[in-house]
Length: 257
View (cartoon, rainbow, N blue to C red):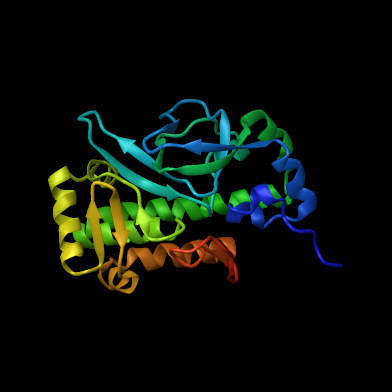
């Protein structure tokens, strides 16, 4: 017998799409679709997680902020994942700030409703446990990348990560915000983007950044981009959709080790 299709509200989030209709429908009934703006704070550092957020076309970032005002992005979360997943293991706050990186929508569920809905060893609990592993691997690779690789390949990696999570080629973000996310000065961010623009890979201006040559960006990006995608697919059993298009599932064989 064919399984029922996912409720329409859930179709923009790849993690939710992995659930059968019977498990998904009660969850969606307790969710609301919310619009987020760039720089909007979802969860402040060490503050309670009051909501669980499943991005649809918004892209979120987790940042570490330093006492001198600097910040560095340690993770990107888009339609492939969930924010607030630590509630499944009883952790009600995290040591990072979660903000909206690229504006858009997400499905939001109250923390108490989420706790009630999670069944030990159930399909959602299993998915989120694996997502926690995938996110940890992203954070670990991101830290290694920041320490090892030069600015331009890292900026190219970040552009590809964003491109994987949006519909189209336009990344709506300011130059100053790029610098804030990547731990660069505005001048440093501009120089890196200018280099990529000079090579015909992107254009950038006051309205944001537009990807012009995806293959060229992949060629210049550091190896961490491919490793992050591969690790995600190995753990989750699905990968991000084709970049620059509407999100869809590309099944792969999971292999958690």
